[in-house]
Image (cartoon, rainbow, N blue to C red; front, side, top):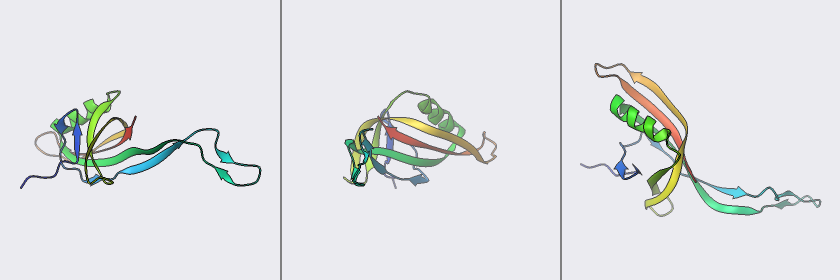
Length: 120
């Protein structure tokens, strides 16, 4: 049985994540805020900017590959978009990369890797 592909980095299919979440936020201009009348004024510059917190359990081979992606300025990412229920492509970068040894094995351990992908 083949697993669904949730993430692809530069065309390479990533392993099945332990956790995967898609968040949409709006980017607001500095000109927004509370008016003198006490109402909130929002000056939205971009709607629906995607960020994806994700966690993997991987071998040392994938740990090295994910570490290399984390150092890139941008990655072409295909991700499972929850609004479309299909893969969508955009440019993103990695923020908050963390690697934690989950279990020591005879082949350089099993690692828990977590980070957040941010849309550019």
